[in-house]
Image (cartoon, rainbow, N blue to C red; front, side, top):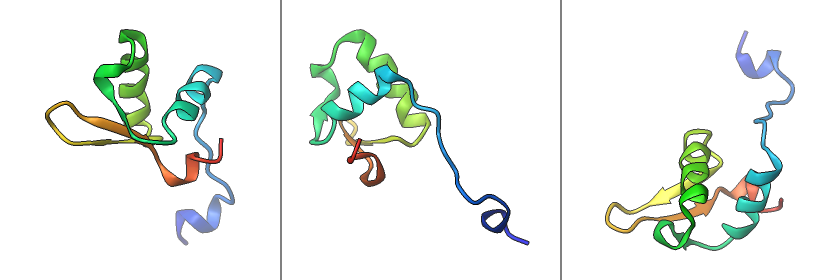
Length: 70
């Protein structure tokens, strides 16, 4: 039996603060343009797979497709 058959829905906990950041990231944003606190939250959200980091030098972040409707 596969895990998808056992679990009907899979949700990731998102705080109100993370929801506000996701709203900002509907379009690509340079990490350097965010505040230091937002950058820390963004790194946590990358680990949660809520957003994607693009590039190595002066990276850009954007919300994943399933999170753009928030």
